[in-house]
Picture 1 (cartoon, rainbow, N blue to C red):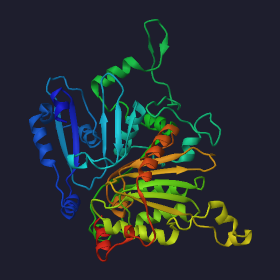
Picture 2 (picture 1 turned 60 degrees about the vertical axis):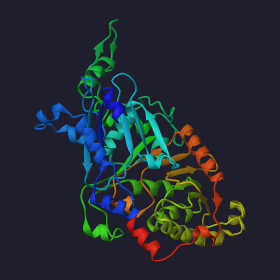
Picture 3 (picture 1 turned 120 degrees about the vertical axis):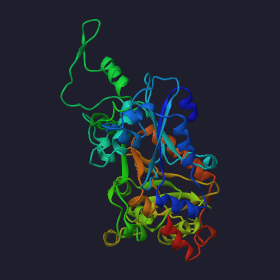
Picture 4 (picture 1 turned 120 degrees about the horizontal axis):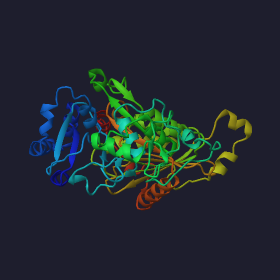
Length: 445
């Protein structure tokens, strides 16, 4: 951030400074670097902020999205820092360029020296549609409907079941944006729709906000990228003490989107990397397992926190669905042993194969596959853990992506992690936990 400010950039940043976060850090034995951001903001002040504080309605929401609200003409840049008073777990960075393609990076990666050795996932998206869609989502302005694989597979002019995809770093306009905007004449006298000239004019006024609109959000979704977010709006004492009873005030779209993906009957195979797991997260995985889908799950052997809570939740799943390598009947054999009459009474459950990784795996990644290849692979990546407080209390950002190249790259990375991991054996040390430590950890997380 300092390097960017030194070369004249504007940096708007925010950090979770809530009471909930402070308690979590106390439990984990970690600390925050918020004071360094305060100092950085004092070192690179926004001289116009004080004069424009009154009547400036757009700065707050732009800062909350990490967006640049205006270009900086001075040699020294500007740094602004906003303290988040509600628990915020989302991780994203948006880079706006006056000349060139804007970029968004999001996922589960934390920013800090102590996270350098952790294994994690993030997605880099380039293009106005991706950046605009992310800005819409984190500001609560995105489309109210949740992104679904089916919606991505039925783009304009495409038959049902075929995938509309592009290069993961390219987003072409494919949707009708509605009424045409005023057109301009080029030097050759030909008409062109509002484009380069007007965009440059808007860019000079509101860098970063020009693509924060419904058209860009719809464009991103039509090209296989849909964002979902949790946005808490207040603190609730009852919810904090008993998180299983109700959520904090606000909107929470990540869990419904994840439940849709895991419950999608078109997919029968899932590969998942998860840093943490509790009872609520286990229910999400059961949506796939109970309908007969197979799940490969890789987790850290010794996570930085909540090791016993992980083992307790994973042990419960392994008891119901787990294979430990001693008995691994094929999918067809398992299903053919039932007569049609028996199959109607009880549908075979899916199989869970679990692995533990020696590295600190901080991932929150889901890859859904159809073994027949009838529908495109889908993946979800973001900041939301498979835990109750992530689902119902924390600000989170996830994305559902349906693009073959992204799915292939993600699948290769997951295979590499699993190949270097140890398969979990039922009753083995990876599933050992102590009470009441496991229950306390589940409540804390």
